[in-house]
Length: 269
Image 1 (tube, rainbow, N blue to C red):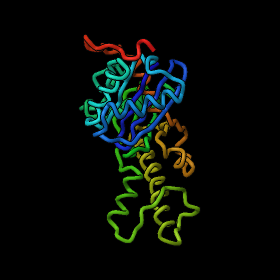
Image 2: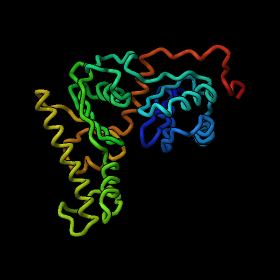
Image 3: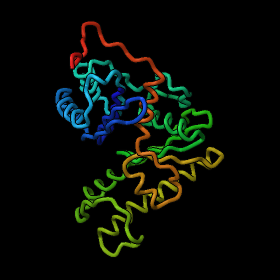
Image 4: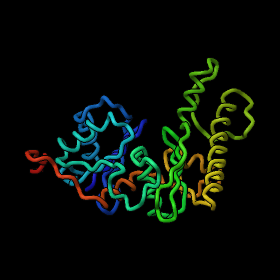
């Protein structure tokens, strides 16, 4: 099985794939100080709950936008699963051109989203990812990565509004019943929800105009289904797009070799 690790600014997603389907997908809050042993205690318990064994993991791939977490995640793969993980980075074989001046600056999550979206829908298209940041990534007809847009994420905006305005409470995100709020919380919810709908619609229109044609839009991230209720622009919702992209990247590239002297744990399980 393949162990896939998607380390974002807010959550780290761990998943295992058996070449046919996802056997388990689990999330934990991102904490750069969490050690490989702490990850292992949590993850091995979940594998056992899913009737899976660590010894069944034969490959691993890590995509991260949090460099500080990479050391412990790599140690997790080496020490607890006995595999050297493939690290998603621009220098790997992506199967497409990264058509920007500095490919090494593009986040791994944006590249794997582009890979999976093109494989599923074919370009040209826009991938909208509702994460800690809300990103818009443009994929050409040939699958090439063309750049994109980075905007503040929804939860960041909610927190900033609460922190900067003394009388505004911290709110949850949801679709309000109308646009005009009749009290503070509905007014804030409307500003966040319909404001981001307007952001999505406006940027998709401007990107398409600059690109010179209408682009298919693929959305991912936990809040994608919610915002799809407010606009027809988000035509395709793919919750596991980033995981699928990491899985495809691992399939395209040779597995790194574990350093000499290391042994696989659980070999006798």
